[in-house]
Image (cartoon, rainbow, N blue to C red):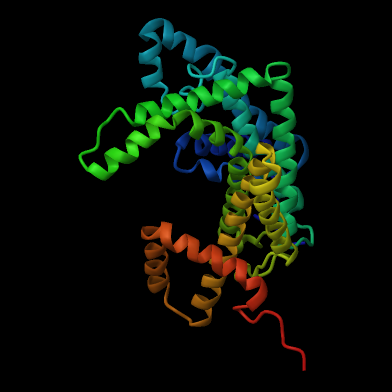
Length: 351
């Protein structure tokens, strides 16, 4: 088993420091996706009570912000002034639009979402898992935990909660379309958004499961990649995952997409069940991201094979970001068809 960060066990003070670091990342906005990283390191070094303390300290600070500092600032500055002062605190913007939503509960639960990712990655890090199992197993546990918590939190008021979220999306679209763009084509699109705001909100809420699961996949992938590079000099992490440029989703993923595509077509012409259409769309959104990652792995494989300099690789990745919309579809297609055509020749041909 690799030694991460030296042979000395992590002290309680070190665990507290890593907990504070994760809280700063959580509140930073830009680095929020790396919130699990300090907790992953803490769990890998200490486990048990020390890691729990590293999680409880940020929760206590968040509870103090929501329960004491925010009410104090609201009394002194008013609701709008407090919102401007604490704009960096998660959950404040959603509270007024969704009556059943408590910003404090949201903010602390959102932090626990990242904390659970860090702890689970620390638990599974030394296991002989493939990338597919590592990410899939962790994502499934976090997603089911989140679904259970949300079910208990809105127990008996699920309909009100969903309608509140739909109202939030409608209000957000109305705010966006208040500004009239100068371009005539954009004015037409803005008018369509305003006219179909209720329908867009309806599907936006029902596609949230796929969006949340994709957020999970992105955070997991990002933290695994960053942890492997960041801690490489200290013994490394995730030693059994192998080179990520060689990663490929098992072929069973193709069959899942095909089955749901068939169900979607069958539903459109025969069954006409709204829930089946929504389920198929959620599956397509999740697998689009999965095959996008596989397409990125193909790109990384050939950039490494051609021994391109880091500067050229950086330029190519920058081009990918600049033209993300068209190139992302291309990467998804490459990832999907890689299951058939084996663009990287990972499977040796039989004699």
